[in-house]
Length: 159
Image (cartoon, rainbow, N blue to C red):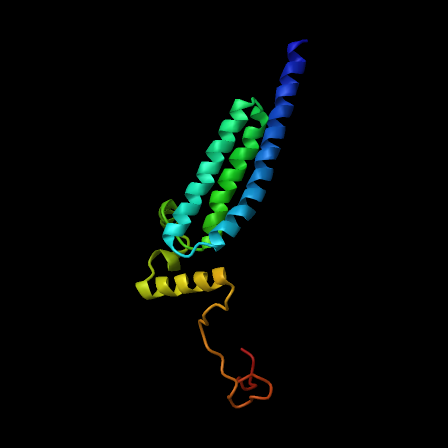
């Protein structure tokens, strides 16, 4: 076997591992988003992250033990995707995500929220977890000047 064919085979394996990593990211994000959606408190979120990391470490150990190293990309993608998906599902800036959100100047409304706003967020997550309707953030009244159509705006000139 010459060196030219060996180089091409390792390149193909590298591409295959990258494809498995991308597949793991997508699947892990969906799993993590489901896990993060069930979390109500920050403590629940951190426990979910520890579960993700624990399962990822055990799966990595199994992959290394059976010498199927091409599956390492899949396991790592699942773990990274699940951690990111848990943050998306939880919907809060927590832990290291809070530092990243401040540094990249995103989620400004979540980083500096008051205790009342945090409590409102917890109530919404708890209602979502239990399958109840989420608390209303604004009320809509139907007893205005034009209650038959449900609109309160008057027709006028367009700006």
